[in-house]
Picture 1 (cartoon, rainbow, N blue to C red):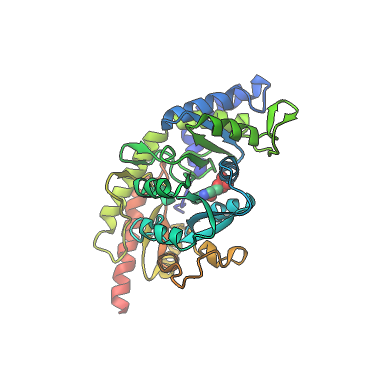
Picture 2: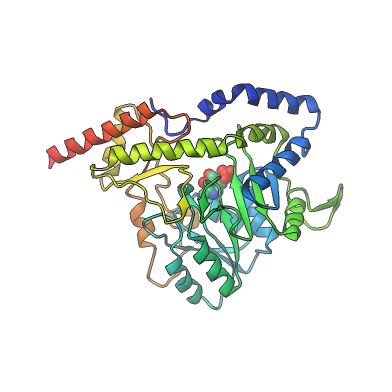
Length: 376
Ligand SMILES: Cc1ncc(COP(=O)(O)O)c(C=O)c1O
């Protein structure tokens, strides 16, 4: 079986170093906010070119804390996309604010910046506070356009980098374009822990201090809370593991790009649409997502032939029972979002995937296309 992602294979690839790092963390006797977290925070901030990285319990907590640190709360509105992991939208509501979901540009499946300005203008009575662009699948959203709109309307930008570790746009990594960014270290991510983990990244010192307080009861010093906070800390074991994996992130992203080129070559000439990138972007290929009008048929065919695939995501957030109706009642709807979710398919993609496996998937898709033509 060719798996869609394989965090176990990634562990095996770095097993000796990871085992040593885990032992070091265990032997230290410091299990919460010790040296491993402090060093990882420093190394990750340096990797991105940011001033501060603050380790937290998950990507969801990173988004939640980022929103609260930016002062987003009851009475505020936050704009984001519906074509994303539900966590992006859930955290807006966890912070007590209202989410308004907008459409994506079809080519890259990231927020449509042309539509964004219309959405902002359409609701002058709402207190719009922030925008959350999502660098979905590892492809950077149009950050220059987003930052210029945010500046014009005085909005805070919180990048959702859960899928974009190491992705670059115009020579700047995702995570340092906005005012603050949230990362997830869920095991299948490009930088994945062996459990849950996340980080908030910013170059604003005041914001960083507030984020550090929010992750631990709002403590100014131990047992003295300046403001109400949470308990969401990256733990020492995960930080030790992430320090090993961070060293290989660029190499593994380069391998993902190599695999994507192999897929591109194998699929050109089939009726399946391959992913595209905007000019100046270096895609991190967290996912390699193709599109087809016969997606479900293709998925079943691949499954029957030993290839596992996923759909990111089958139901847009605004159509899920818990989050229905978080769109503007202007009649425009989210046509691109509702179209794409019926067509997308995430093919196997991870740095330990072999060239032969990609070729096998490519050959299977070519065979499926041939059968499709015969059936017509
Ligand atoms: C786009 C996006 N945002 C947020 C999250 C939430 O991260 P976590 O699972 O670490 O809470 C994820 C992870 O699934 C994600 O893909």
